[in-house]
Amino acid sequence: MPTDKRLYMTFPNNFPDHPKILPLSDAAFRAFVEINGYSRTQDLDGRVPVKVARAKWSAEALEELETNHPERPTLSIEDGVYVIHNYAEHQETSESAEARRSKNAANGARGGRPKKPTETQSVTESVSDSGTETEPNTKQSQSQSQSQSQSQSQRTDTTYLPEVSPVIDAREQGLDLGEVLTRRAKDAGVSDLGKLTLLLRSVVGPLSPSGALELAEALTSRSKDPVRRVHAYVERSCREDPDAVRWHYDRLDLAASA
Image 1 (cartoon, rainbow, N blue to C red):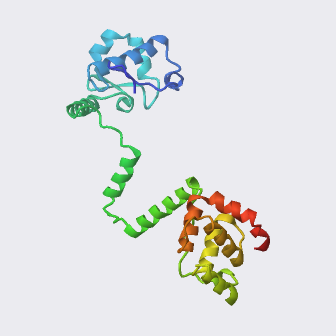
Image 2: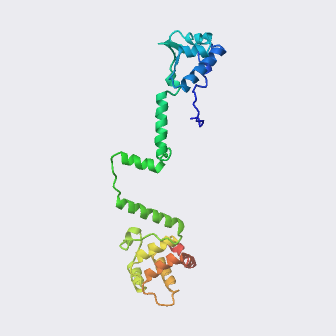
Image 3: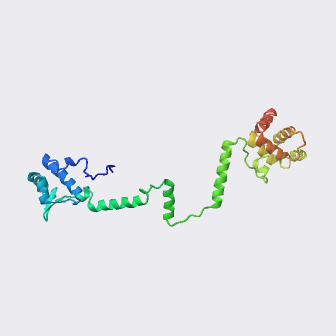
């Protein structure tokens, strides 16, 4: 749409090559353009009085426009007026102009043209207009939130430790916890060697239960005070100083015995 606020006419870019227009003389071509402009300026909706037309344009030019097609000429005379063929399909009529002015006035009263809806508004309005209200799934939202939080922690926190179930069955994880090793673990203050092994594996990699117990003993030996809760101490070491845990793992060469 042109930004020029003056009245205007519209013609297809190729209209000079139209079979009815191409054969016209320059005078008839000019008359055709001018009669459209006059009709629009005067709000005549493509109906120009014969007397006015003959006063403004030559009879020869008007005759060409009346005879450039046997059934649908550019101009035809009806009740003392020249009627422009298909005028309303190409030019603005007084009715459409009034509708445009009314719309502009209404928009002006509301502060301008309505803003185009944003993508979010469009989606929201679409859902609202559908007549269907979707209740939020609280459990699903919480699950997604926890999953996203966990994923973010994995990306940004190198000390992240996956949660290990306290009721895990060591045999299901392929851990061979013999009677002697289990007794030794309890003597060292480790109540659940299977859980401790999986915890340390999450930081250092391959590790046997006996290697996990040996690594745990090496970590607790660093403490100045006696360690009563070995698992909690090791878990804190994995979280706060995983490099030290890996250093003891490498020093003890535990990967070879895994």
